[in-house]
Amino acid sequence: MEKNDKRQLLAAFSLVGGMGLSMAATVAAGVFLGRVVDNWLGLSPWGTVAGVIIGMAAGIWSTYKRIIEVEKLD
Image (cartoon, rainbow, N blue to C red; front, side, top):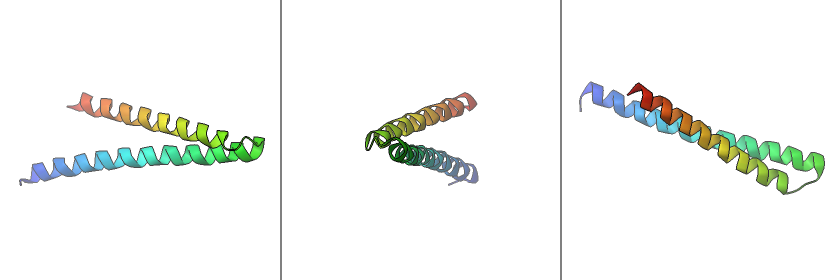
């Protein structure tokens, strides 16, 4: 494997890993904020459910934007 091939492979792993972390972080933030809303307004478990859904949507949107950004570079 050439040096350039290794660099491209590592860049791809970095991109995918970053997307995974972004997805996990947005869902975790959604769960946290949903729990706060549940405790504040007494809506358990609906605040957490809404937080998970919003977190997943934010993670998917972030991943989509990142893919579009990478596609423009190629």
